[in-house]
Image 1 (cartoon, one colour):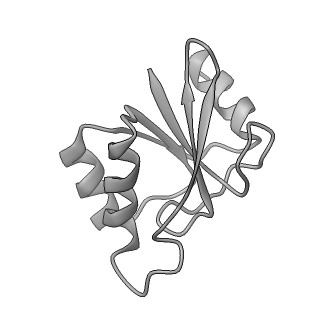
Image 2 (cartoon, rainbow, N blue to C red):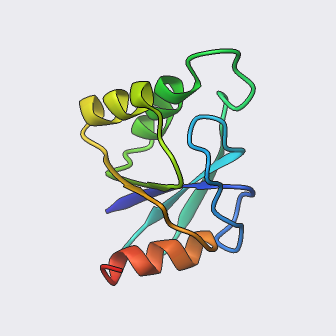
Length: 105
């Protein structure tokens, strides 16, 4: 499974970013191997529509789950339409929040 995590940097050791649409990076993690792809968020500086644009971006990478802090209404609708499960309220590094998710915490 591919898990997208909003992050402040492009590694597993980066802190999760609580913002979805305007986070710096998406770290897309393969839950079976923990290999990852760090993607700069092209919507981070958008004047509007950052959430739906960010949803399209992670969808391009095959994300099935998103772990983040908060998601706005428009972003939630775009994520729902893409079939991406949203997990909010996590805290820690990318690696920690993925491991916690996989342990059902």
